[in-house]
Length: 178
Image (cartoon, rainbow, N blue to C red; front, top):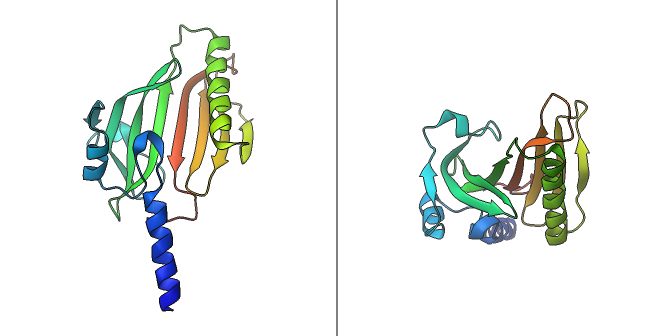
């Protein structure tokens, strides 16, 4: 029994020490994330109900990094914490696309991000695919330390191939608790 407890403690320590997006580590407290983000532009979103996550249940987003730049896209990253443990469990990076860009350009952004994630994390666990409506398209990568999901949200109006918003979620693998 003691060996099992020590093994679980060791696994939790390793999971908490794994680096995710932007030099952050899962399991950090709010104070630790603020320290790690020194030099980045952040804002408090704790009281902004529109910025709070719907999933996972029992999660909250107190901090948003507002100076996110990936390739040609500018966006923000919400840091999501467990209500129970008060520790970082997910980073959600989002990009609202300029609707003045052509549909082809907007579709190209999702493809470019997918290619970049594939270069970094290898072949996706779930290849890029769209739901039955064609509005939400996703691809998922998984490493031992994290699950990465690329999500492109399209307009319900034609042309559906043109994303309106793109998000990338960096989270602990589904079976890991902090």
